[in-house]
Image (cartoon, rainbow, N blue to C red; front, top):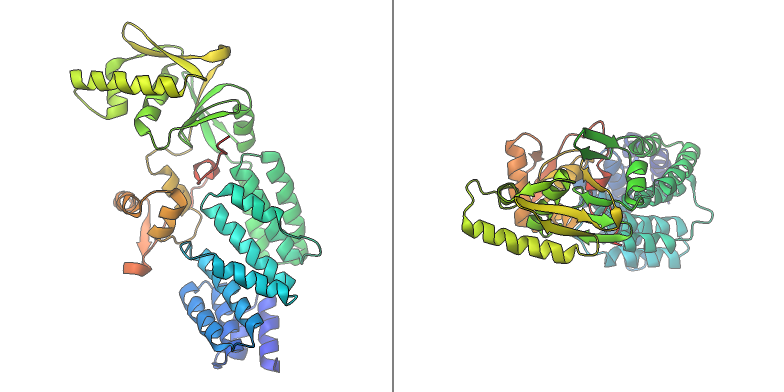
Length: 406
């Protein structure tokens, strides 16, 4: 390694991207291209950084597999920052194996942490937990230790384990303090504030009550029958009935829960579930069919009994019925929550994270843009979507797989 490359590397390690560029800005050899790519990534110029890192990877020869693997890891980190989640994880896994085989343990661990963060973004919590469990965290540098604890905290938050998240964030804060990286400390502090912000609303006849994540966790463990509009399902103790893909049934369950312990008349149920202004006999027949389906699915949690004017929800085991609503209303609440993380998302990445078709995501984005809630940058395949941060509450419960299915 020549003196200019060494000086640029030291500058990047200290977070001085502009200082690094002064040493290698005019060079076109692969090591200089790699360092320029990392510097551009630190400055937020992700598309340019990605091109430079790809050129560097191609420039390293067959005998320079270690350097090429490092470029692949760096590009994967840039792709994560760009919310480009559609690539195959095989190249990153192969790079991690190559780095580990050549005793570059720090970069190998970085590669595996990037893979774990990608799994979290798309809501694959069990796989992310398994990836974290396989990591050997002994002798980590402070910055890598902080990132590891941040991922563990994010996993705990999305699994609604507030105590575990609080402990992981305390460890992350201590490690970030030792690393002396301001951006890392800011990320830890932002995650810690999420524990104190309202995460959901408990609706009742007397009004609504904001709940923090630890209060939501306690509510779900209380044994009450919770109609969860954040994740669109029913929960009673350990039993979980997902209805996210059955919107009519969830609309019926929500209407019944909001009226509990009273009943709901048939016309109101038809309007809420089918969005019909003038019900007729065909809609009443369809209501009977859908109520029958909901009754069968929720039989272990509650009965749905007919009354003179409509239907009433009767939870089993003398349970209370609790209506848990998201901090923001609307059919696109989860989409807005994903976009409010400050990153620019592509429609393909949003589709992957939400488990919805890309066409459905595109239609929702057009509606949100017309309402002024999101904005786009770029054109065609480079088009990305952003939303302003949602201040005052956390969006954890609106993110993919915020609650475990069990």
